[in-house]
Length: 463
Ligand SMILES: Nc1ncnc2c1ncn2[C@@H]1O[C@H](COP(=O)(O)OP(=O)(O)OP(=O)(O)O)[C@@H](O)[C@H]1O
Ligand SMILES: [Mg+2]
Image (cartoon, rainbow, N blue to C red):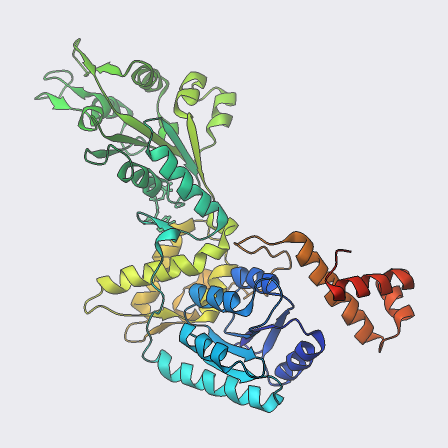
């Protein structure tokens, strides 16, 4: 496969037509994937950054407009070409308004489609020298600075909103760079405590001896160097939120003191006997497996249960690759706007594909850094390409789409399976030039079962 071959998704429920077009597009150097239904197309789009999508508008189930919408929303740079039925120019016009590049009307000659396709590619090449970002990130895919469109992230946003309304203690877990601190801030900013302070304390960044004073404050002379009385982070967070980052690194002595704060909502400053009452919401975070540490005896079990009242888990980026295009847009917009003068930069689909195939051990933080570095390397250009991404990612083979696809929007399982069945039966018949006995053998079915299935599927009845 040529390095810069265009990846194309062809969506049409008419198998013979679709396969014929796919084959000829293949002859012209395109890498073609086929989808027989809108559901299938959505699933493929959520996993892979195609350069081009060609879709029929009329599809059973999820229709072509929804497919077009999903494609353009995820990949502002994708080239979309619409196939419409005879006499439905109005639909085509609407599709163009929606952002499609062009359309062809059925029945059409392959050459007409190829012409439309090539001129759209040419236009895009010219325009990307003067690129722009069409889609603004939508509110439903973000909460404060946290963006994501995968099902796990959307569920997480809902959870964050729900828990924000309470004062319950929260334990946020997740690998490094998955957005634990951002999630903690989002909770605070959506909570009734938002008018008061969000105070963060990183338990691993401060030497053990100072951590206690940092958390509880101290009075004058409490220890060498304690020249005056100082408020600790707990007091600073009064009526607000205290974020205890890397809580797993706390010493046993401090764990005991923190437990008391959680149970009694009171404490003493270091070197003082006066008890201070406090109203603070505590959010703790860790990338460690606290339940394992409890089992190993390195973290107090009672404290674990006091902290883990509401667990919030941030999934690693490699488990939600469909968030990558959105995150890339988000960082390109933010970082591009910060440049002097501000720049509007896009990412090529090939670059995006590499990013979607990469494993991201440093999660979103790593992705943010790579986008930032790529912006610097792409100086003067309006598009980031593979060469700007750095070695780790350049060397990832741009994988083909996964075979276990799942669309963000979910799917109708039975309908989907029927679609797959119908496609496979039709393919087997094509392969055998319509010979049902041979086709049935290829599918390990009885001939009568094959005929029965085919009839029902074509009538759209349950099988
Ligand atoms: N879903 C997201 N949307 C936008 N930005 C994100 C998202 N997740 C993380 N980030 C960004 O990635 C970087 C790391 O996030 P954050 O500091 O919250 O991670 P963390 O889980 O606390 O990491 P660590 O365990 O290393 O402290 C930040 O710059 C943050 O803005
Ligand atoms: Mg952090």
